[in-house]
Image 1: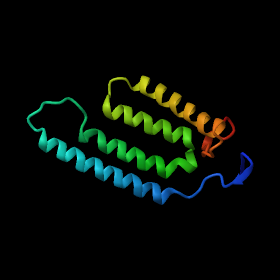
Image 2: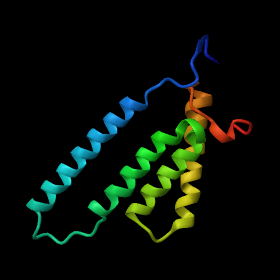
Image 3: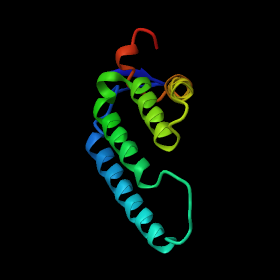
Image 4: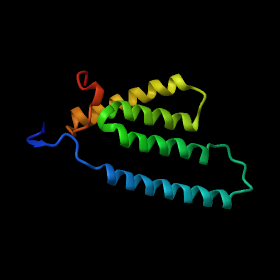
Length: 128
């Protein structure tokens, strides 16, 4: 139990199966949407990642859901942000890693400290 606000709540509710179901549905909708968009605009020459970006982002999302309890929010969110940035633009890996770390640490402090929402701290529990 962790004390949040005026109530004691569980540190991390079991939402894994529901999150996987919602994420799977979103990936399926994205695949259908991208497929229809590609067939309707076959004559337009567009630059973009398209389906190449969808697979790494989907795999990183599933990996993030699977490892968030053990590794914590900061590491899994950093990995997810970094893979997403790399999927769409693979030219600046160091810049992407710095931004991923900054965004995930900022999001952790915003939600866990300011809004007092329980997020798993994982391997950084002594630091955060």
